[in-house]
Length: 407
Image 1 (tube, rainbow, N blue to C red):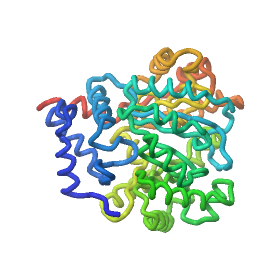
Image 2: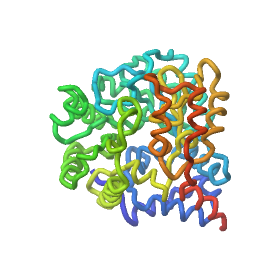
Image 3: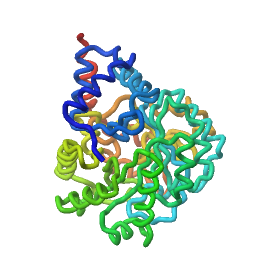
Image 4: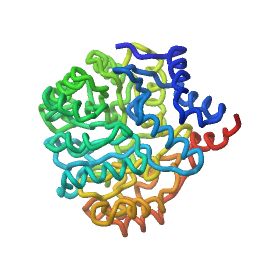
């Protein structure tokens, strides 16, 4: 599989200026937006192009919504690009870093989730993700996904457990576009160990093959650990997923939530380790033959988009609690019991702008101090925690977007 890089990529991006919403930006803004994509590569799938799974494919209505969001951010009217829905906490694996630990087993009804999908789309969200636990355990996943209009692109996050050819075809019919399958190592035994299942590796590889055969844009999602970050491991992992024809390697990192909420700082990545990942992101995305890399370390760096928890992103768990992101275990209320608008407004009082550092990592000790054996932390306690948390500067992307107003 070949991706699109260099001049051809630039010409395709420039050609997308046909978008009426993009034409609302100044010339300086447009140049800067193109500049932010300099270390990405394009993939053509069907009649659309994909930069990575953090953005909708273009051209299309979801991408237009994404651009509207960027226009609003330029004018200091920030609302979420993306939202993830934790449809269930059920899972047959026992992952070392599981973020669903300590969360309740209650699940919302199909009707609840369809109503939430409508609320998210009314808010202007352009990417909706289905996560868990294992979202494939929800037999109504297709019905929920089918309720989403083309103004949002949908992504499934899965271990692959239950992603048969038949289920893949059914989910494709429901409108899901991206599929991200957890694969934490190129070595079968090591992946199985990390996922707490002797079948995890075979399940993930089979799911990747089924996803590609069904026509999904497919990513292998890698949760990197300190001991994995060597050139030998990275090169072998890239070589392995390349042999599977995966479109993208989506690199995330361990977070102080779930099973890791009480862990010490040395479990989490250091800045030099993030630099190592960023360098791979840049290097591999210059090669048209290898899978692209989309890493949190690069995309959420202060020189780009930073942390959008509670502003550019939000999360709703299986019980209906709204949190700033799928890792930050602070609840600002239950959207089913209290109403979506009121809970969202409450959260935004404490999350008013993107930040240059990850909110959770930057305040992990403060958040940990409020943990009493259950997650997410309750609304009253979450508000008190926020009063003690440190905020950081607005990331460079938003500062430059506002500054580059001239035509």
